[in-house]
Length: 255
Picture: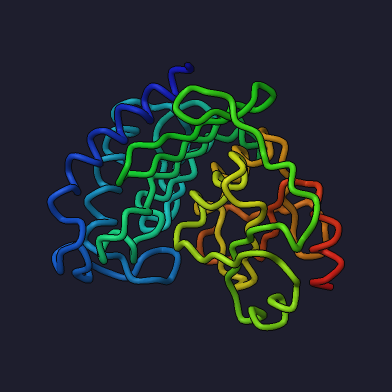
């Protein structure tokens, strides 16, 4: 376990404890301000973000931190960028649905090197280190071996929902936390995650993408090209993540 992952584990514990009494209550969903990503910051988002930003200011792992609520901030380190989503799946957390996560990724020169995603409701923790694999609670994970669309389970978001649903698959799912859904592709719980909203940001996806890819999955844009996010939380992208086996079939359908 790297020093960065150990720090993420510590932060996840502090965040879980700090928001536990707020989850599923009206207090969690209280409007605080408009976030840097152009969406409303809820109280539960702000509490989680403040804990993490304060920690990284005191422990300068990176030169800058980019978060959905805060935007871009100088952290005082020598190099590297941390991409943070303090509560991925805020609606679920406010509603008391146990599917919301802390997502943290560390990158250098535009390449994500380490990713950490914890389901704050259950404690399940996904970790990936570039070139060293992906893990769930310390055990290696691998994408599914599903090869036929009609046998697959896919998660899907977006305005092109009805068009994409003409894909003949076994099950459609919409779970409400992008980072976790990318990790679920990585561990084979679902076979693909498709987001066609044009609103997925680097903070949503950076850690989960690394988990998915290190577990053997494929992540691209809807044209099958490498997915490049700007370091700007107000700009979103579309994304297709699969076990790799079915990727070409899905991309062909979406074109």
